[in-house]
Length: 552
Image: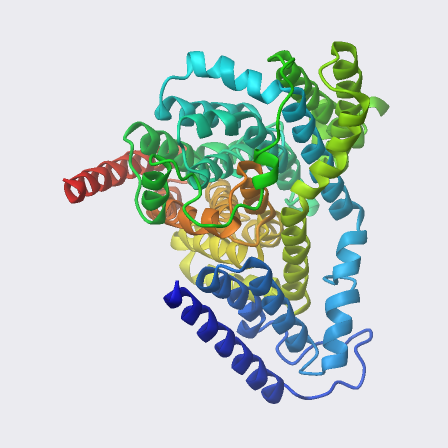
């Protein structure tokens, strides 16, 4: 404990010294930060400093709020060239990244409302006894820790509409089952997170498919949805993550920090650390009248209404085709529509069945809000940090680096794009922003080689998902922690070794695909996918042998 305190103190001192140096080095007061103003570090490597500070401090200090705030503060000071007044105004009210404006945008406000409504639904299902009843039913069919983890993966694959929806729904349904079989909250959070974005990015009917479709430039002459479908067999990280989960669960392989969490879970400690941000929600006393239908029916209605809500925002009921409606949808607004309708449905269901009183039903709304306060605060701060990197031109810097090197190393471009996308998504916490930046560049580089274009775009999508998957400031990662009721830093530190193992193998896979695609220019390059999955299986098998030998 004393060592942890010393580490945190040292980290705090280093952070304060760093900011003092930062203020003096960049302490040029700008005359005005109006139209046309650019900071002194704009579109340079220094633009990546804020997320680096936030991520490093989060991993060292284990304090998420402090780390995010320090990253935001460094971004504001860099943008203002050290001017404290301008930095404060930028952090609070900037149109691109300010706290206030981030909350006020329709997209972000919709996500926050959805999180609150889903938190309230979870509280309602717990209070009505639906979750407890489902847990009792599942205990008769799921007999082992392996079975509980496989059920988590299966449910995550089935809920492919949206990653945030996936995280919150899977967590609320499966958590009592994994708790009963002593699966650590960190392991549950990893399984939820790994079946969120990686599944959505290979699902044709999902909010992610729509985002990719519209990231392909309209003037490129390429059908965006057709391109998305072509990238699925080449999306090595998404496919590899699913294979890796199955191998880790069936081989009972745990390594890195996850090994300690799983060992402690089997001794009765599901958390390992003292931090239990959702302890009150976990201790909720359920109704004795609840049945499985009180959980299953609201979840089914939620899935159906969210899909209807998403296509509604895309104009489906105005005559637009289903696929086009998905491609032109606002998934955040659609999820709010779906969750709102589900709350109303659940009210009538529970009142009719008499599983909760009217007063208990109403009390679940503030309870659901309280349970979601921590992830909402992290989400808002993560958006703010992402906005700071945008103001500093971090994305433009990465774009220029890729564009300047692409022509000379086309044969290695898929591997390079994958690595750059991982780094950019990890630093900014956004996969959608990452592939929306890189896809237009890739389209220009491979305008005359369609197969290489498909491979490179797939590498971009895979890298964006990988970086988003393991970034502490990613909204998907944050919601996976919330869905599993897991301390956020525990989820991040235990997940990174697994994600990076898969990423390392995928980088080799994209190198193989790039070489084959460059020389053949045909779909024969898809042979890289089974090669990569076999190589990943070999790595996992050797790792399991090594771990077993260590434990012997």
